[in-house]
Length: 246
Image (tube, rainbow, N blue to C red; front, side, top):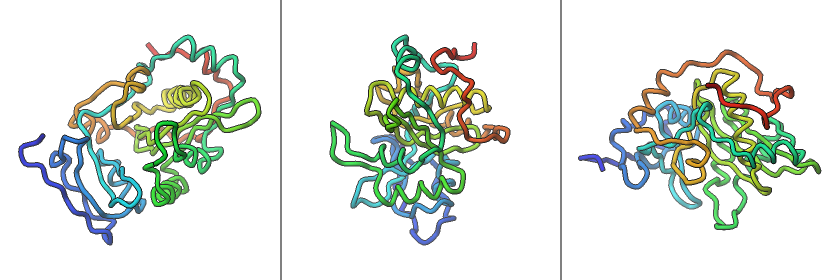
């Protein structure tokens, strides 16, 4: 824990209010920095630019976090198993980008086998739908041969970083297929990193690594805005055969 951690109370009526320095965050648990404020697009994008994200449950105030270390994934370091390649090749899945952002986010918010609750509240849903309408938030969808949505993810783009928010799968490996498709196009478009926020065994098994907060902040501040591109899947790419750049 830092020597003098402070929890800042944010004004819910001041979207342009600056966040406190991330060095003021409590390192345990998970870098809690501030509470309150609102989820306007201006405040949210200010948060991502500062290495901060909201995370709270229903009937709780808005909590803002900046953890250290930070889980990140570089395209060249994603681990692609033989089983994942086989699933991508043989199961007849179709991947799309932003084809149905609302459905992807709703699926991420659905109850899981291990929990009936969700942190993607109706307030979060509306806020991130607005980010999507403004071109800041994007989704990856995976559909099976019956055209059923069975996997995907969504997140926020800031400069050259994709800040992952949540992923889901109702069939084996479909969230991994979504992440693989995202990684391939990120590398092609000039994005440099996926921000996974908090570490998990699942993410580490895919090649994610831990980065000190100060290094993460330095990277997002210096990241270059990729050239303009359309957020569309490249149908000519066979994700089952893609290999990370050397």
